[in-house]
Length: 45
Length: 253
View 1 (tube, rainbow over the protein chains, first blue to last red):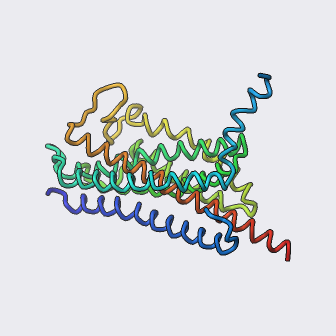
View 2 (view 1 turned 30 degrees about the vertical axis):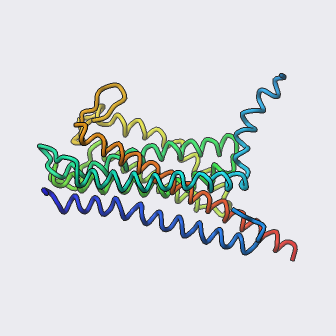
View 3 (view 1 turned 120 degrees about the horizontal axis):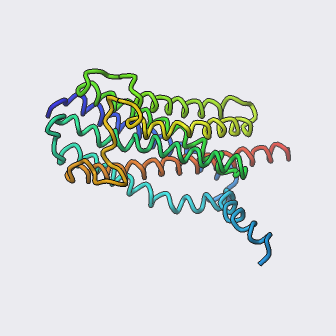
């Protein structure tokens, strides 16, 4: 494969950047859901 | 039917979704239908582009960077359209969910714009011999990145979140002028960046074996963007509800 370091670098960024966003979004969502349920158990988001 | 009913209907249907409980119920049902196809299409498209699509006769394997660069460039611009629409709804109709959605689109859009700039740089080095050139297309996308950063900063710059959201919404609407500049920069100026390969009015300038993985990647990235914004907006709505409940408890105490 030609230009391998450039291709690998681009694919690494293309996977890592969305993955970091996904992990942070789902962690934040789970924490918000837990906290909301702890404050008011009637809340079923 | 009287005139009041005619004018009230669009506003009612729009504000139906401003109810946080209704939004959360609807969003939690929609989320898996966006997230799983996003994951499957993105993985399939990237694997197809990296391993099974042909190399370009001139650019060699560096053309595979296109399968990340083009979808992220598309999302940098279309994400900004979403941001501007939410800002418009926020300014005109004071739609409470629009503020939250705009605040959550900003960081995701900035991330995809950064990805577009970084992959463009990684593609530019072997093809043009430079990581960066002050070309009209590259510069206008850099301005888009700064607009996203400005929007994120303005939201957090005021003690009163409503004032922050209004200032950021005005910036987002002013920044819309940059979108046609990005789109037509390759036509208006003599740029190093290539012109559009895929347009609505003519046949694509890509071989079909490259076009399909590119379309799959674009669909996967677009659904990923939507899934991320949806998850972040759900979290923001819950966090706002938590703040409201805590303040109500403090008032009672």
